[in-house]
Structure formats: structure tokens, C-alpha cells
Image 1 (cartoon, rainbow, N blue to C red):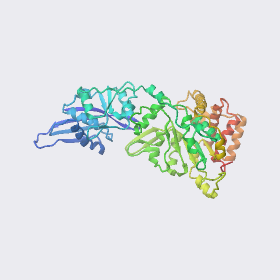
Image 2 (cartoon, rainbow, N blue to C red):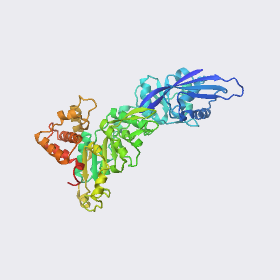
Image 3 (cartoon, one colour):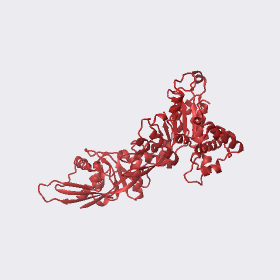
Image 4 (cartoon, rainbow, N blue to C red):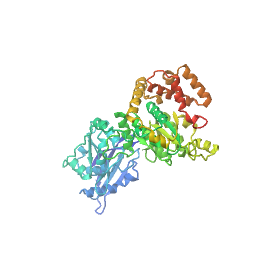
Length: 519
């Protein structure tokens, strides 16, 4: 008897339908044992599923007939099948092929899940993508592991069932156990989860100029570099940046959740990622872990930071190849990963926050510590970061240490909620201004042609910018970055025109283009 079970495979962020066909035939030799033949490009994990499924069925009280030949086909046959998520559909497909569960009811559902030897159903990656595809294919329902049910249930107009054990799924298709679909009020849970970010700029005393730079960066979506000695607060302030960014929209939240689902980063109780991600990988990270890829298409840190912040502490300590691979994603806001087995495009629209010491010892231009580095060592350290990468960092500011006396006397800083109000107001102006441009939502995303229309400075501002270009020997890309930052400063001032003072402040944020720090 031939049975057919619907399941799914994930490639990048997208799921594709996979049909698991099982055909059984009786073997006539009296001493023959049951045979299993798998076709359709299964990998080793899929081939090993035979043993997991057999033991899971026995643990659930199911005994398949003896002396049977099972031919199992994973269609489409030209796509390699990877992972252990085919265990559950294979178990039901084997039972349906020998008439132990109704094949007609089985054909109306999509099944995915890994089985333990005791019949338990273990979580898989990409449940949200699979649920989206199941709804597109208009299936009646989706059965997933219990730990994945909340992320999958955010998809409306699809019945999503969560099961802990194979026995529950068997009884469901036999009509002996009524699994109940999990209901998630997507909008209600999303807005309820948008609580206050745990880190607040009110905790930061002093550093007014640096906090202003963060406000400008947040208002325009600009990348920012912090240069300062150890212990002056670079990491502390970077962690507080998500708290002044505009709240995630529901669409952004769904897209971010989908990435984290594919990466296996969602907890069993998580339905949506409601806060902007903050990713801070160590400088020893590999190129693949940063960008994404591997033997199976796994999102890297730049994709996990999508719609959020990627913080690279001690930027010069990262490998040169890892830093250079960031150049294209910073421009295109997506990364295309091409391997021999797959090609996938992943979104990676993030704000980059980088930090570095001013020299190898960390105390160049420090008010109380003596620097032990030679000019040649300082130049070599700075040159670990290429010019093209620095050009893509719009704001570069020096962070100077705050003295103990100033810390004791300084009042509490401005709360993140107050700063966010100004940021949101500036972003709203940009959203209205660029409403006719697809994919352009903030000043950092403006094209060169748009700069001529929306960021042209007045005569005095143009003169200041021309002098800065010659004095600092800036590139054409740096010229564009200054105009984008100046446009953001004007938006924070609620000014339609880009004035001289806006250009001066924007030029002041090109700290690394100067001959030395501390000017």
C-alpha cells in the first residue's frame, strides 16, 4: 500500500514542501526480516532515522508487520534532505502504508519533528517558516514539537498542534485523542512583550557628546565607531542603544523571529521577538559564524542582528577577512551565501556599533595614564581596519574617561525614553519624506541621487564641507556619509534645510579621518 505524508524542508529563511512517500510489499521468504530502502537524496541524519523511528514506534506500542519491504521516497528527489525533522512524518508514513492510521486524514496535515527512542518529540529549527509555507499550501493543520508550537502558532488561519510524544499524534489520527490547536493572539502578545529595555541611558553620567552621537546614530540609522581607553564606558553605552531606537513594528518582529527560528534561538515560551536584537560576538568569531553559511544554511551574527544592533567590541582584534566580509552587507543590507549545495539570501539590516582602543596599550591621549606605544605602532594598529570599511561607518567619536570627581557630582543622565521620543520624531519625518521610495526608511539608506534632493546644504554649509574634504582628504563615500549625518541632525532640529551648523557637527563625527585623536 502506498502512503503519502506532507512535511517540509528549510533553505535559508524559506521552507519548501517535501512529500514523503512510503510503499510496502510483503516478502515471501519465511525467515526474511523487514527491509528499508530510502531514496531522494537523504543525508546521514535522515538515513539514521530508521532506527530512531523503529524504537519510537515500539515505545508507543506499535508493531509493524514482519517480513515487509518498505521503499521510502523523499520528493522532490533532486533536493538533498538534511536533519532529523523527518522522523515524525516517517513514523506516520510507515504506519499508514500498512493501514494502521488513515492515510486520507494524514494527507491534510503537515508533520515535522525529531523522535527520541522513547517516542518523545524533540524541537526542530525553522518551525515559523514551515508554518508560513503550510498556510500558503492551504493545509488543514500543522503538527510540530511542543517546544516549537508557540512560534509556529503566530501564523494566522492555520491550525497548529503541539505534541510531546508520538503516541499523541498516532491517537490524533486514529480519532482517539483530540489534540487542541494552540492559539496565539499575535498582536496582543507582541505589544505586551514590548516592555522597557533593561538598560537605560539614565545610568550613564557625563559623556554628553557621546550620548548626542548615539542619538544622531539612532535617529538616522547610522553606523557608529567609539574610540577610547579601556573602562571609559564604550560597551556600557553600546548596550543602551536599542533602548532609544524606535519600537519594532509587527512586520519587523515577524521577520526577526523567522531568522531566530531558523537559527534555533527561540525558547519554548517565545512566540515573537518583540525587542530589537543586540548581538555582541567575540573577536575570535569565524567568518562563517559572523556572515552565515556552513554545511547547512545557518544565519550568522549579522542576520541575527537584523532590525537591531551588531556590536563589535575591540574591532581591530577581529580577523581582517571577517571585517572585510562586512563591507557588502553594510551596503546592501542583505547577504547572499553561495555554496555547492545551496544558495540563500538572508536579510541583515542592522546598525553597526564598533569600539576600539586608540592604540595597542589603550592609553594614547589619556589624561592620567602614559601611553607606551610608538607612533609607528599606533599607525599599524589603526591600519588594521581598512579605509573602505571605515568609510561605511558614518559616525566616529572619541570617548574620553570621566574623572571620579565628575562622576560623584554629575546628575543622573537623560532617560532613554526621553531620547527615544526625539529619535522617533526624527524617524517619522524621514518615513514621510521617503514614502515614495521602496526600501528607503531612514537617512542612512539614502542613495546618491537622493542626497542631491534631500541633503543639499546651504551655501555656508557647502563651503564648510568643501574645506573639510580638502583638509581631511576624505573619499567620495565619506562625503556622502557626512551629508547623510547632517540630514539627520537637521531632522532632530526639525529643520527642512541642512544648515552650516549641521554640517559642522557631522564633520566633527569623522574622528578617524583626522591626523590624531583628541583634536
